[in-house]
Length: 113
Image (cartoon, rainbow, N blue to C red; front, side, top):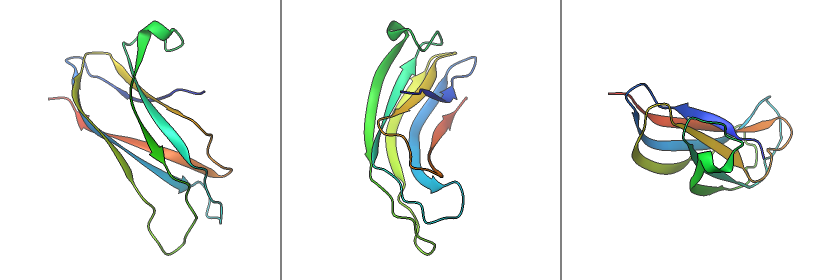
């Protein structure tokens, strides 16, 4: 499956608190989304296609979404709460591809101090 880079640690490392996931429609439509699982990988800053460079940290189930023009969609939060060493990266893979005209957004909450 496709690996999506969602965060790269700074020169002195970075603290990562959590990742928020949510479905959204790319175009205003009545498209509904598929259920999926988001898997979060810690990569040592090297080639992501080499298995020894990444380790599965955690995963979270994301339910299917029915599009609504009048109701907010659900956010899913995966706690991280660790320091990511300098140049290490976080990647996300999805178990099921999003439906047409929809996507899964991943927002990392954290920073450099």
